[in-house]
Image (cartoon, rainbow, N blue to C red; front, side, top):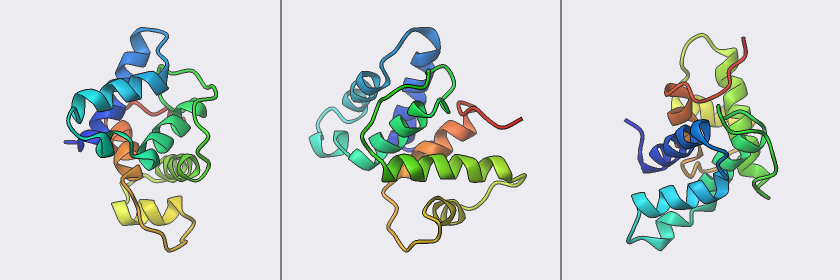
Length: 129
């Protein structure tokens, strides 16, 4: 089971399949539903940047590529993580995935991999054939 940030990513991705959804607005809506009393939890930029970065690259099924975020680092982490997952037959550990996403730079993860893994495990990421 995904944590709430992973759940938000899944909710938005599934909405994107049924309508021309604005992923930024849908993310905000999902966060409002999942964290109705916590503005701090709703506004976590690392997670939003990771999710919207995947959308921007056209990696989230049902959401067209476009310009959705100004985030560079969190977008890159998420996109690299998807690339790493696409290269592996076996599922890497979360720490291996984060290390690949950051190119081995010592940096604290802030839940970006929750978003990537939730989408990946629910087959909502465009995968290499």
